[in-house]
Image 1 (cartoon, rainbow, N blue to C red):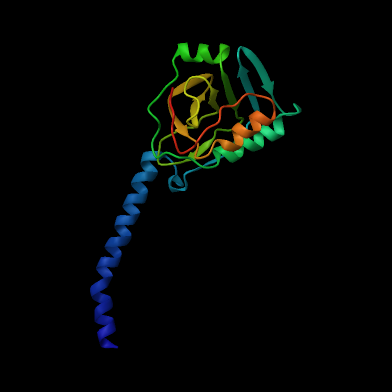
Image 2 (image 1 turned 135 degrees about the horizontal axis):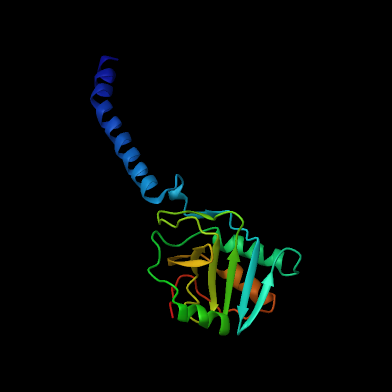
Length: 187
């Protein structure tokens, strides 16, 4: 009995030091990311209130009541539910690229009433709009560009599996490139 108490007294400082180190690591990441759930690597509030599809110069507004809204919003939620990066992808959208997206290829813009929360170690801010290239520049790697107030920010996140979104777009008649989520491709 006496031996157990002395062993516990010897181990107690090490246990407290371990708890302290884990707490410091956790809190440093909370302060760095601004997110208490940074370790989850998922997203919250990813059901868009409206979507805009640009397909070879054609602008298609998809909002509640549109026949494609529910299946497309469901696919967006599934594809954005898990992320595949621990830092923002070092890429941005130039004016030239944005102009290209409105005239060529296929892109999907998502708009939200409340900011999307990305539970990630990357500092993502509080985006209210997301842009996903489907065909053309930056397509094929599961990239999602972040923005808010009508502006696109530098940096992107990567979906762990964009397949549900791409399959749904193809089923709805929008052209979608086949993608292997394990191979990031940036054009």
